Amino acid sequence: MSEIRLERIHKIYKETRAVDDVSLHISQGEFMVLLGPSGCGKTTLLRSIAGLEEIDAGSVIIGDRDVTEMPPRNRKIAMVFQSYAVFPHMSVFENIAFGLRMQKLEKAEIDKRVQSSAELLHIENLLERYPSQVSGGQRQRIAVARAIAMQSEVLLMDEPLSNLDALLRLEMRAELKRLLQEVGCTTVYVTHDQVEAMSMGDRIAVMRAGKILQLGAPLEIYQTPVDRFVGGFIGNPPMNFIAASVDRQGDGLIAGVEGAGSVQVDTRDAASLDDYVGQPVTLGIRAENIEVQRQATDGATLKARVLVVEPLGSHDLLTCQLGTEQIKVSTRPDMEVKAGEDVHLALERERTVWMDPDSERTIGM
Ligand code: ATP
Image (cartoon, rainbow, N blue to C red; front, side, top):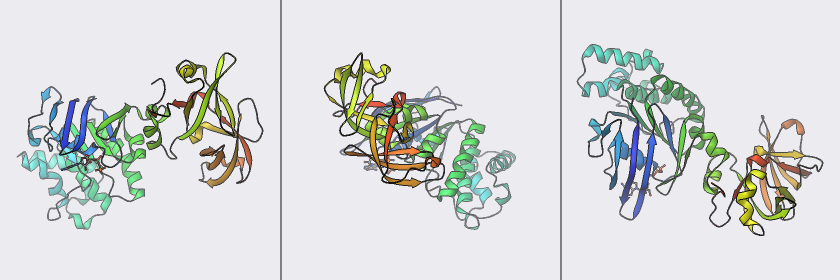
């Protein structure tokens, strides 16, 4: 197994900085996800690790080898792409064996590796068939089996599930996760799907415009995004952002929301918000960290009106008018909240993040 160290990688296409001074250390055996919207540079970064892009500056180190100048075939990596390129004229067996034959391995070794990686992917009974005789999900498994059979220390995957339908994606997501835990190779996985990133990654690097905005464990990024972009990109629904203004009250601070009331600032956040007294801030909170109550209480200090109720089975998703803003709130279905109802909202203080309205960055991070 190998760690990967990317140091100050730059890749520029004419006027586009596709990768802009990115450094990233991926530990041995880690599952790292590169996540971001279309065009943020994640594929270019992955291809730079593979050696399929010549980088303009920086270095790529795999294990103890500086591979920056090495061609892809010498980098000891395996890859699975979105268009999972299985060869239609070759049997499933030959597709999986392809890379091994290129390496000129012994027949017995090739047979053994094809068999064991096909078993891992549950396609051992399809080895005689041709790709046109298997389903889309099975074709996807062939591509993964071919990569696993290489027994590379590093596995690079670019949106490998994006051609599958929603149900199969869900199934393959869990299957890939199990498989990669079993194989234990260092994996870099590119996706624009935040659910996939959250559910699969040990850590996620959120990218935008060629840079890594935030690097961390999925829950850490979900709960404490570094800025409004990350908070809005991760999570469904996105984090709510509410305009507020900070004032002193007694020994503490409160944040007022125009036309709705005010909330107490958690003592943990008070020091970093002190500079904002008398100023506007943006309050960030997720739908599930807001509690709906029918009566005003010490905690439920914001008034809101329910506009829409979407029953989603496990919870109801409410759209509420809070002062001049609309926010999403999640409640238990048995509360039976109705559209048009006036309610009181309690925000979980330790799950509230505060952002500077101009820079849109989280205050105190
Ligand atoms: P997607 O999810 O759409 O594949 P991405 O995050 O993987 O997007 P990249 O493919 O890495 O993004 O592209 C990053 C930027 O570099 C984009 O602005 C893209 O237009 C540009 N780019 C990528 N490849 C080339 C190329 N060969 N020539 C010129 N510009 C390129």
